[in-house]
Length: 335
Image (cartoon, rainbow, N blue to C red; front, top):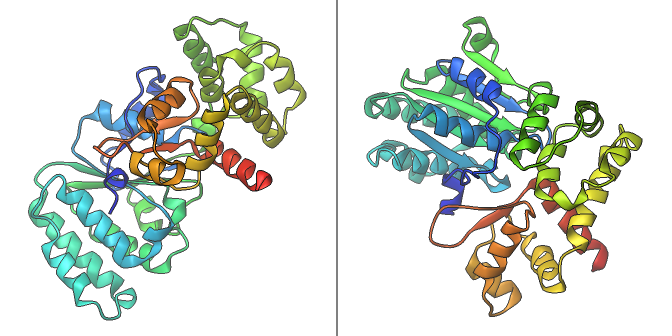
């Protein structure tokens, strides 16, 4: 299992701490389940990284991908995440996995085994964060497992799910019991004040009405993009206003501007490393040949091209989902 899946992204020092959202999650930390649901680009992962740093509770983190829709893979990832906090957790659960037969039908039994182990071993409030849950949301076995785990979740564990769509979980009981809290697209959209604060931090100022036009016309993803690519500010407000309601074309314009300004070797690096979910330096060498790929990766990060380095010795990193999609489409068109 990739270690990068089990680490939250590194916290960037230039990121605006969105206190209103962090405080909302903190105020509801006693809820068994918290949801952060919005389209790509609204800062879901960044918010959760800020939250776990601010709340300072033990956190078990899993960044999900399509392969985790297989129940044994999903359960093994959860166990490994918990074991990074308490190595003794999960022995009986893993033994049940290795028993093998008919795991899909035994999702509930697996969940009950893990819940019992958590109840025995977790001695202080601990967060389990499942990021990119949309990648596994269509797996009936995974959602059945989580439904049962939530039903039996011990008092010492809280679950936070982030994704692009509401999870296919049975939450009516949690709602009735006041054990569910959620943030959605409307909550995560940048406010005018947040955008102005972010700009001031970077030594930039625009009138409040222009900031309002950016927030209203380009939806939530715009702020992070513009700060990463400051050379595009000139004349951008008029483009945003003209493109109001056309997020796709506007985003493509911004991404193309960022990409087209890069030298050929950086463009090649971007297009090639956008294919794997979580590239690392060894994979860069395998795909691109010998080279100082750590320096190139660092240059891409310094240029604000939506690259986030992940903890660990492999030099792993990943791209913002919107930018990665742009790069993959560019690669497809040039093939």
